[in-house]
Length: 141
Image (cartoon, rainbow, N blue to C red; front, side, top):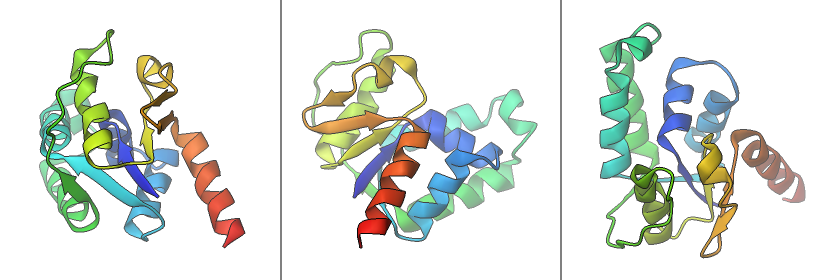
């Protein structure tokens, strides 16, 4: 199962101990293949410098998190140039990463991303649904 995490999911996994972190742990354990791109990682790095994020995660925390991503994720080069997300064109990079990285799922907390539901065979789900899908897949093995 190949999965792209939207930047908001990565930030949540960094700063909270909730379900996004649980999902990130599933990637670390190899229960899913995390797919990302330099564009997503650049946006993550930029957002993680915000003072509201730094209340919860130091620069060292961010560096350690990025090292883990580097070890477990497949970094995809974005080649496609389509535009899909009218409400926030920055999110097109997430969809392009999923498409070019041959992902099965995009996990996002953004309403406009979730409203797409699916794009070119890639399902767009929230964290809760992705955790349910992983649990279901493990039960069938």
